[in-house]
Every structure is written in structure tokens, then in C-alpha cells.
Image 1 (cartoon, one colour):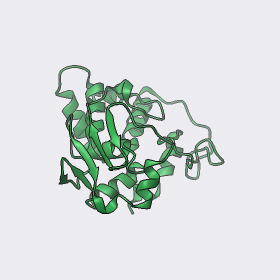
Image 2 (image 1 turned 180 degrees about the vertical axis):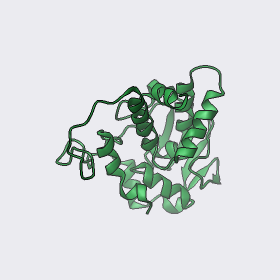
Image 3 (image 1 turned 60 degrees about the horizontal axis):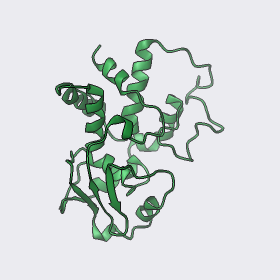
Image 4 (image 1 turned 120 degrees about the vertical axis):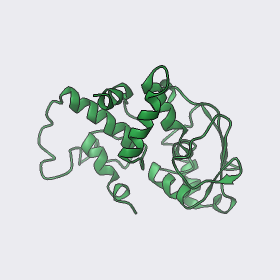
Length: 206
């Protein structure tokens, strides 16, 4: 298990939000303060840079296993495209296989999604793909390997009421298969907390 997977709720406490909208999150409960020795001290007002950094950390951590280098590379790809860089950044993040598998409710968390993909249990257009950063295009079909379709954790994920499946995906949980219909706009992405991708763009463009 990775360090991030074992400390994912510290991320919630550090950012002060229930990043994945999970009932188990300590934010809003007894530990509704930052981790560490000085966690219960009053939060200071953030500078413009602090707000930009917090927005970047919130968006990057939401997607689970993305490293800083990978996230920055996605920004660099987005900035090369004509138009709204923040919209392109969100579109790239939502095209990643790990994101789509999570949105299709084949896993409870982004961290469980990573394990599912890395172990070779996911196919794209009939071919096994074990890279979470694989970029999907409109019309691609994602399915779970037959041997995993009766897995109890996977079945529990599909029946979870914590999240709804967004309109830019079509999913049949009986066949454990779904289609990436189109790249969503930022307004269509069902984040459980407020995201500010324009501040992320400002952070990297400093």
C-alpha cells in the first residue's frame, strides 16, 4: 500500500474539506482540524499564492495517484491548446482511465481504482490496459475482466449511493461495461467540493 493510500484522510484534514465526499472522512467530525502537532491552531488567512497552491493541491489530490510531475505535464499540455486552459485541464483529467473507472463506480475510491487497473482487471475496447493515465477518447468502451465481475468489493462499489454516474458516461453494471461518451466541461464534473481550476492555471503560470 502506498504512503498516499494510507494517509488519504490526512489530505482531507490538511485541506479542510471532505475531498471525495465519503461518510468516513474526519472532516466535519471529531477530528475536524489539520493533522500534526499544531493542527488545532487557528487557520491563518491565505495570501493569493496560498489560495492558488491550495486550489492546486485540492484538484491534484482529488484524482488520487497523480504525481506532481504528471499533473504539471497535463497543465503544459492544456496550455498549448487554444482557448480556456482551465477547461482543457479538467478535460484531460477526466479522460484518464483511472478517472473514468472511478466515475463509472467500478471502485469506491481513486486509490482502489489504481489497484484495479494496475493488476490488469480493466479492458479498453477489448484490450487490457494497466496504466491509469491512459487517455480515452469519445466512444471508448471500458469493461472489467470477467474474472473480477463477481468480486464483492467491486459489486459493493457499483451499489454505493455516495456518488451518481455523470451524463458524459454510459454504464451497465450488469455487464460491468461502460462507454466514455464525451469529454465533459468543468461545469459537468460532479466534484463533491468546490474546485477552482482557474487558480491552478494562475499557480503554474506565475
